[in-house]
Image (cartoon, rainbow, N blue to C red; front, side, top):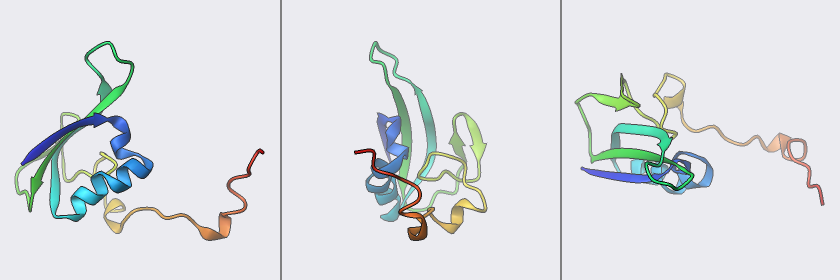
Amino acid sequence: MAGLIATNTIAQGDTREVGLRAILATGNTVLRAVASEPWPGVANLSMSQVWLRKGRWIGPRVLDGANVHGITTYLSEETRDSVLGDPFRLMANIEHCFKDLI
């Protein structure tokens, strides 16, 4: 078992992809998490707390103090849709979704 404290970006964008997604891809399971809460000190940032276990976990899973079926790499509750995989970028929209302002 292991735990980590990180900024809440651990569950967002590239940080999630190379962090939590990579950790779970090696056979780890998130068994408890606090998705985001203010840092207890004077720093102006939000932190996430994640408890992990190598291998399968048959005990309760807790997200933000509530029992849940599972916890995703986004530190959100696992749903039927979330087990289908990560969303992906639609290449057909690549020229329509973002315009360079330079």
